[in-house]
Length: 197
Image (cartoon, rainbow, N blue to C red; front, side, top):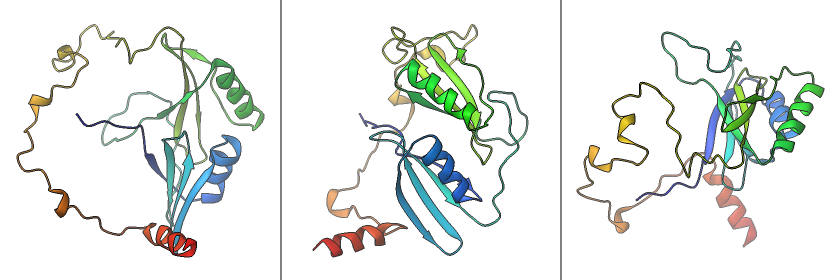
């Protein structure tokens, strides 16, 4: 079975990287750990946890979106509602709520969703953000919670993956034929490696 380590990065877009850095690094406290760029393009990464990051592209002409309440129904083309970041404790959740309020940002009350407590706000680009703390003793990863009264047919199959629903790999790529193509950022790592020698 393939194992995942978390969210390597969520990639968003901004038209103002300085405002974005001020919010994500300076207000939320996420370290700025990588900056890639050239004229007309930037790609910055913020550390969310030891295995997870949040990234932003900065492109000329990008505008923030109109704030849409988290989870409010929409119609037509649509791709993203909001992202929720986990908090270590209830105290951390309340401390962040106070910090966002002190910064003059709109932030919701703490909402009890049964298995998580959450607050809601927006970043400077209009990206809807939720911050959530898992209620002790209610771990939906250990004991999945199915509360939909009329679940879809696929959901009725349960929590575990049904691998047989997809074709099996017939010809895996042999190790000797695996290769990677250089992409944005590879030149920085090469430069750091050469400089260290």
